Length: 172
Picture 1: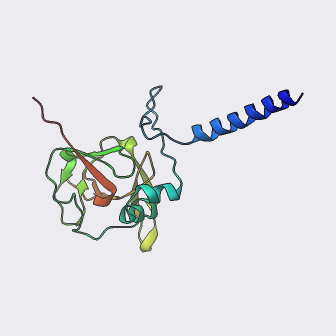
Picture 2 (picture 1 turned 90 degrees about the vertical axis):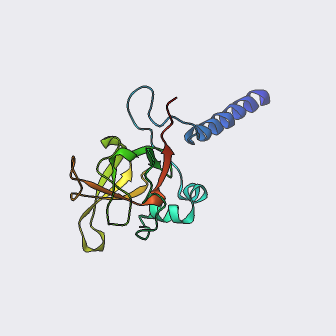
Picture 3 (picture 1 turned 180 degrees about the horizontal axis):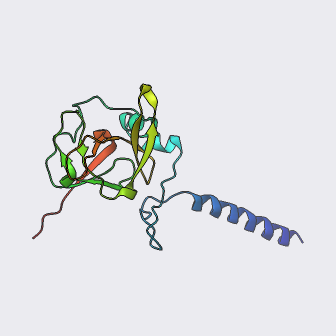
C-alpha cells in the first residue's frame, strides 16, 4: 500500500514540475508559430525584463519612457538592414522605410508588416497620440503621426533604445 501511495505522490510531483517548466518560454522559441501566421507572444515577469534589459531599455520599453531627442544610437544610421525590437528581436522596420527628420528620433514611413506593431491611443501629457508597441512582447517603441513623407504620409517616431539593428547580408 505504501508503495502505491509513494508512486502516486511521485507522479503528482513530476506532473506539477513539468507543467511549471512548460509555462516558461524557451529562448529559441519561434517568433511566428508554424501552424499559422499567429505571433507567439513573449511572456516575462517584470523582474525577468529587468534582468534582460538595460535600465534605459527597461524604462522606455516597459515603462513607456522616452529617450532624449538627438541622443539615440540609430538616428544617423544609414546602413541597409532591419530594425528589430531590442527586447525580443521581432522584426519591426526596414532601413528602406527610414527617412531623415528633424524630430530627433529615428523615423520610418511604414513598419515591415502592419501586424508587427500595435497601435494604442495615448492620451498622456494632455495630448491624443497613437502609441506604437511591439506586437510580440508589448514593448513601447514610440508614436506614429500623420505628417510623414510619401508613399504613406506616416511618421513612426521610434526610440533608438527600443531597437536593435541587423545589417543586411552582403550577396556574393
